Length: 631
Ligand code: SF4
Ligand code: SF4
Ligand code: SF4
Ligand code: FES
Image (tube, rainbow, N blue to C red; front, side):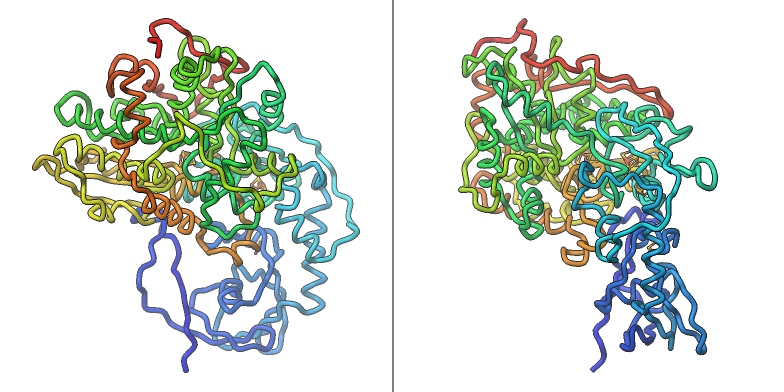
């Protein structure tokens, strides 16, 4: 029987705008031998790819399939035998061919591989016990699996300055192994081109232009480079200690909100399979950590839908520019500010859901509960490094206070849970608090590509027709194609919808719009897959990717779809707590108070800006009280 060969040609990033294209393709099969075993491969595959397909492990470090195939680290060396002559070759770039004989674990291979990793470690700041990536570092794992106990070489330790001027990513050149995975993801997938190699020989660093901090170049803060980095050279800027301080301060009332996608990703940090829904345990963990109230950002995702659906209808009536571009992703907003400032008027003026939540926590919630807003600290658990940037934006506050005080990534929350010695799998499930914890299925699907637009269309359909949309009609909006398009009819008018995820795909779409193609409503998320693939989510190294699904974002998105499908409340306009909020406090969507608290404006930034942030940095507490009615 012929061996079944599953081969995915991989992402076609630029030409079609399809990040996850998987076209049926005629393939020419070849046979060759790895460690005495005959394997079947497809002509054009590398030896490494063919070996992995056959279930044979070869370690790698710089390699990212179809994204970074540069052969630079030499960790994947194998012996290749051609006509009786054995040579060492980097298997990630050496093509598999008919009749080839490959040895992956010969004494020579093991010795040389070990030497390569020892050389990488020779000038590496080996601060494993205090490094954020301790126990989740590909270099550390390799050193362990290769049995490195002594490093024979002493490299020059450069002690370069750690860059942490910006509020979202810390860059430590002393832990960089120059694999260039960050550069590849930033240039080939996100198409931002922040990183390149500077200087020569031993002085080489992979850095933004002129070695500047990320805040001084056109970085969009998406954190995809952090996900790609195998070491602790690129990490999120932690704010765990500040959150502990707030929790320990008896004068503070600490409110936490969790983004929709956290309920399907946090479990991975504690050994749950990818795509596990752990909502109840997430709430229980936050209660155990000592937060005074645990709320869901899904609630303000529903609120965003209400505001944005009304904004869409307003623009369709000729009041405002079309297409309406979604604004709930701060990475995409920053991208637009840098690269497409001419479309800033098309961006929805809605703040992102976690900022709306912060504004309401310090006004609506404070008054409803009789808490002095000065005492309220808002913590947001987000999938995202860009939301750390967003929370520091000067626009994100009312009066003199920030909407959101601290943003924790999924990974940071997991660290806090471990620091508190909480056994996450054993937690009894709990429910979100009221009045900002109820959410519809529409709020949940915000966490993956297509979800925001689908949720808004459900509500816009109801607002114009008085009928509920037939939900399965929106299947075209789901899935992981880099660009998706659909049409819906509202009151007999045909609306053209488009969705892009990953800023490389966003460029393709925006160039089409620039060239004159017309759309009515467009969703863009900066991260591939949307927030399920966010820069603050659990990180998988090349070793783990073999035991989890090859593209774990799909499993996470499916899990959000299951949450949506399991809810009786599917549409934002049915959320009773949102309706109460309008009745008791905001008045109406796009009303005066809504515009004051829930909407914002944008700033063209240029391509090489000097970003100024943090005017509100360090200040916590409530909104300015003027013009905010009593509940
Ligand atoms: S955060 Fe995003 S835009 Fe900035 S350097 Fe990293 S990948 Fe590039
Ligand atoms: S920062 Fe990380 S991903 Fe980038 S070159 Fe250095 S080690 Fe590789
Ligand atoms: S897609 Fe989600 S995780 Fe990524 S930058 Fe946007 S909001 Fe953050
Ligand atoms: S050279 Fe192949 S993984 Fe680095």
